[in-house]
Length: 271
Length: 272
Image (cartoon, rainbow over all chains, first blue to last red; front, side, top):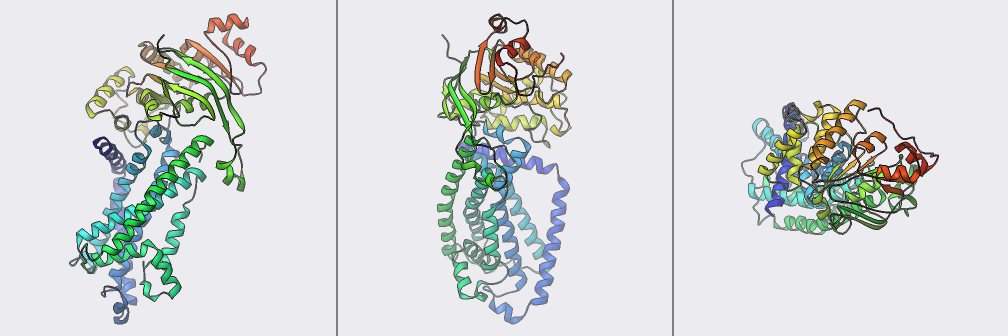
């Protein structure tokens, strides 16, 4: 256990050390976040009306509603992209086979490579929310941070399974991320990212009910805007945990199979 | 009789045929039919250096990658220090160092030391023992000046030495080198071979299996030579014995005599 934690830590340390050599990126990302938040603020100001506010689940402004949808999309992107991008980078830089001849197991290599991207995405989200709160009145005063953390963790676990499936696809077919395209495509319409699910026609609401993104966003908004505690977000949390419990072992098994397949066909290092 | 450092028995490897266009999507699932290794058998003794000599496409890299647990054989057995490469891959990886002979494979924006520490940790070296091993290898491999520079600023030759240091970091019993001087110019290649001979082989703790199609490299480093052609082992013996058996005076003569006129890319006869 201690050895595994140490291995995970060295992956985080590796990525942090590499990121430190691109210092200006941190500043540029903070500036980009400011422009992103400003854009949502002014779009919201343009479309906001008492009627719109009353149709939002927690009430309040469309700015708060849409900003959460947007930053959550960033998180979803990280969960879906991290694994296949780490794999493709390792393959392209020639480090993949050197990682695979070490004594560290593949699940640890995969999990380790995902830690820094998740941490940095969390910081990026924090920067977005901080800009929103400091300059544009985003309401953080009611947030229940314990529930927010629990929802983020459950979301990461739930969607990491899809990310690992994408990595398996990249291992076999070298390019593309169909799970991400599908999920983000569906979620942009039937996930409650930029508008509430309640405005959708019945059949799309049914799709939204089957989409775990809907539950994650619902719980996140309830915890962040409505101050809902762990007990109040238990139902969507359970859906996410069930999704993770089913998908993570399945995705690891698929990845192991894909790796075995590439070891048989000799295509692991092909681009 | 001590246990063989490397043991290969009736090893076969077939690949699926290469495909392009839409049929490439089915390639991972196609039946392997292209022969890469056709029943290889040989052993490498503890402390011995064995060269795999063959033209491009002879099967040298495929063999090394099976031993490094990066490829699965179609049939047969490959063992390192008594551990089966298919059944006990982690035990095999504990015993081997692998150097692919290219100047990539490092994190270019990390320093040499940071890269070595990282790979040392993944090979379960403690912080203290990794630091100790890095200090020792840096001295042996004359990497003092390169160690704290980003890898992207280092020359190919230096990166090659760094790669060899990485392969030896966890004190493996077996070292696998795949065309170790492939990306070096003639002078750097010659230096690298001298260095390999004096700093790794002279100490005698490590068995070496290396693939090459550079004749001087094979002559300079190998105790025995395995000549491979189209996945088949044609001969495996000392240079003197091979010359005697084939009635030729040079390694090139031995190779030509064993393989005949070859359609493959000709062997490289790099000047020393």
